[in-house]
Length: 169
Image (cartoon, rainbow, N blue to C red; front, side, top):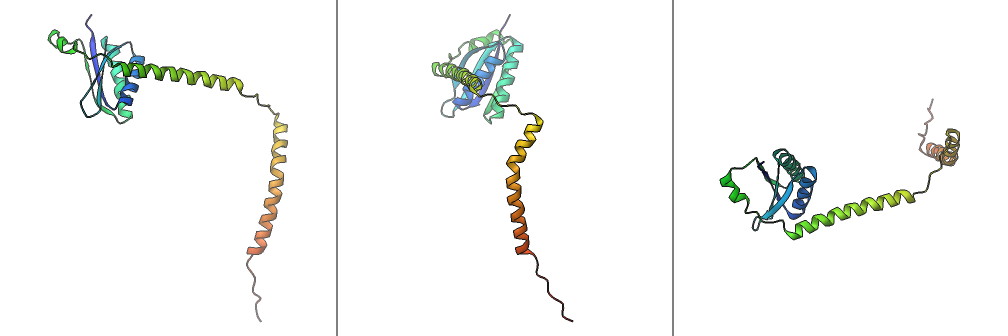
């Protein structure tokens, strides 16, 4: 079975790492390389696999890049011709820095998940109040504030009340 190739070109290394990670995780494809365009920070991510998987991975990668305003181009070549294969097999391998960074991100995400689980376990259990207790608790907290508010409104209304003029007869 002939392999298909997918390409997503993005602007910036951080976005390239994110897109490559999403592409590989979204479908059964193999990340075969990245290629830098000289001087303009465009990076092309290359994947290989069966037609459906490559299309799915390229769709995920291109929509993620578009969402982050970094999509330059994308393309799927389904079962390329033998003459084109020589061009495609001259793939630059995945840069070690890119592969290492993707692994670091994955480990960081896993660590955050573990930290979150530990926090959830450490949370104290909240006391569940019966409806009657809830009303009494709220009333106790609100009542002093209502008295102060009523006094303030009464005082302000006396100050700001319009003075009546006596009519002269």
